[in-house]
Image (cartoon, rainbow over all chains, first blue to last red; front, side):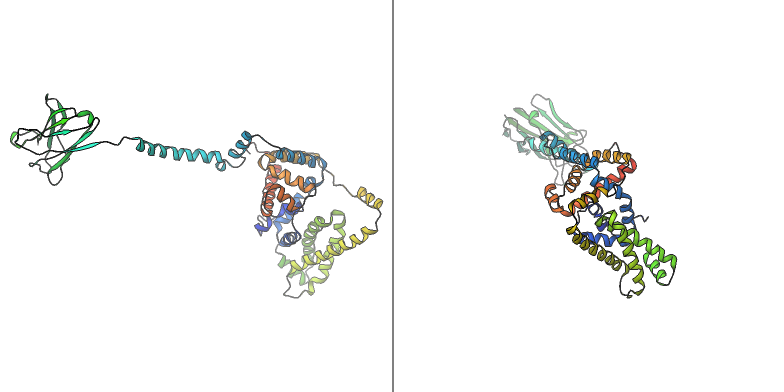
Amino acid sequence: MTERCTDIKTGRLIHAYELGLLSDEESEHFEMHLMHCEYCVSLLKTSSLRTGLLRSDSKVRDELRRLSEHSNSKVGWAEELRRYLWPNVPFPFRPAVTLLLVLLLVYPAYLGLTSHKSGEVISLTEIGLVQSRAATIESTSLAAGESAVLTFAYSHYRPGVDVMVLLVDELGQIIYENHAFEGFDAFQTARLFLPSDLLRSGVYRLQVGPAGLVADEIEEYRFRIVR
Amino acid sequence: MDIQIILSKAQNGDKTAESELFRFLHVRFSLVAQKRLGVQDAEDLVNDACITVLEKYRKLPPETQFEPWAYRVLRNKIGSHLRDQSVRKKTVETTDRIEEYENSAVTPVDPMGRMALIRCLRKMSQVYPRYARAVNLVNQGYTTDEICQRLRLKRNNLYILLFRCRNWLNSCLEHGIQSDD
């Protein structure tokens, strides 16, 4: 017996041929195929008894009728859903598996998107600090919960040299301290973000200087926050 | 062996090849004729068709392909047999037909084979519930188009379904019922 059918497309008609379902033209085509396909001839020879049972044995026919009625009978929506989600097909092709995979892939992405969406929009005010010898201190009003970005310059800034930035309130309490501040750009200016919970109403002093705070290189800015 | 080689040997007078050719034709002709006429009527007709082919194949023009020609010989024999039968049927009394039906040979059934088939059909109805319906409709005499309509299938899809079911059934009968199906 040869291993394979010589024309698979025609070979697929075999059971329809056995059951007598092919049209005259299709039957003729299949029978012509039999003339040169050893594989299909051997399949037909071995299955003739079984086909006879399917077509004419009373017990087999009764069983087929019973199974047919059973498969045709109405089922509840739950059973229909189960059959839809979990049909008897190879495991990876079951819709429930696909659904689970989609959920596994989509849900984290959904969470990522919603976490961005649900984040509050930060209200910011930019406070430009300018060195001044005037006695008056510039005031900036901040709404409740509003944060601030301080923009300041340090004329002694040299790339590669550590700069210390210190922010203290009027009571001398250190609000922010960084001994190696790296926020300077090529124009010797920097920006410092201060979240709203750090800033209360009052006067603040920003000191910028070399890491050891050498007195003659310190630059100091004062500003008032009004809440 | 390739039929063309057998044929050319037979045409050159090789008796063994001619016997081989006869067997080749007999197997195929029997399948076709039994399908179209039933086992009883097929036997004589197949022998007749094989003899006709063996008488004439040497005189075949070289451009004629052997297999389609041999198949055509069989089809002509079947056609004339069916025509004769339809003429004869008109004259046969009903009682004769009943007698003929009762005397017709019944293929002996292997009870174990039948049980195995029923078990596989039950199992298969969970995988391919439409198969039992399709065969049941065939047994009830529905045409292919009616079956397609009832099963909501296109003709080609019905054939494919039947092909898959046949393979499933074969596998079940050969290897037993797989628990993981």
